[in-house]
Amino acid sequence: MKLYAYGSNGSGQLGVGDTEDTSLPQPCLHSDNQEWPSPIKSIRGGGSHTLVLLESGQLYASGSLSHGRTGITTLEDSTSRFRLVPSCAFGDSKVKLCSGLWEASVVVTNDNEIYTFGLGTKGELGAGQGLESSSHKLDRFGPQDEQIVDVSSGMAHTIIILSNGDAYGWGNGRKGELGEPAEIVWKPRRIQNLSFKVVRAVCGRDFSYLVGAPGDGHHAILGSDKWKIRSAAPVDVRGWEEVAASWSSILLLRGSDLLAWGRDDHGQLGPEVRPTPLVDIVAGSEHAIVVTRQNLVSGGVVLGVASWGWGEHGNCGPGVDSQSDVKGRWNEIDPHRFGKDSKVMGIAAGCATSFVWTDEAADLP
Image (tube, rainbow, N blue to C red):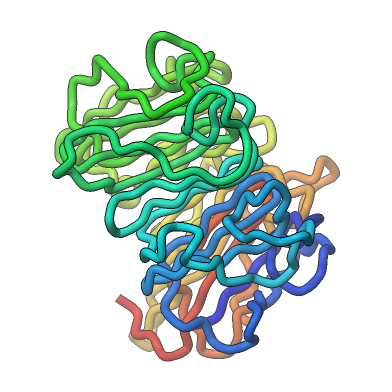
């Protein structure tokens, strides 16, 4: 398996061995220069750092290391290669979920413990008032027999979803993104007055988007209505398959249809005519990446990668307009950039960063 990255890289958050922005996918490097020891499960980005979680439960980090935001304790300010986060940072356990805030990270282990790292003056660490830096193991909350099934973070707040459908959050909730009362929430607090069981959460800059089971169609948006993020939302999202949020927009994949609403001044919602069919979608700070599926006459299948939105740092690939946008169209990433005969296995996006991982040996679905 190989990982490629492009976009903003001032702190080495792309993990490609330097600190230069790039619009062309570059192979990511990690400390031992070998193949990734396990398939990639997910990638999450913070303001200037990136977390790569493997199926094995190992966690790697690249970019800024200041304030211990990745769980790596070092005197260095940053790293431009992915480094293994020592398991002692989270009780020698395996990691199952992670997320990144502006200057902090959240890690959830297989035994349902939550660890936070970094800096947070508005409750981002969830450890209590006055605890604004370093690393913390959070106190347990919610029914003890329930599992943590999802975690998502915005710039300064985090949402946790439990297996019983309850949602908890902490951090900057002054615009209502953590429910009422709208205030800084220093420790995990249950979000009240939800009429459905939540199965997934994604966070924007000033809002949280909670969705129920695909067959139910229930969803809720908490927080600011800037860019009509609440008032322009569809009534029902029944049949949703994937959901993503940028700082100020929401994109929801439903069959061959893509629902998108919110901010669009840089083309964040995509063109009216989009590449189809779409297989997957993710959103970074103000851009989106999609995986497209093309059936060949020969009977084969090709998965492609396309982007749109704000691309000033190269995170939408080459070919932006005079405003550094990909607006009213999309950019297709040359598949040869990912190696000969490679298959796209996953995509991820962070703060003006884009990631694609591939596998030459994989069979397409």
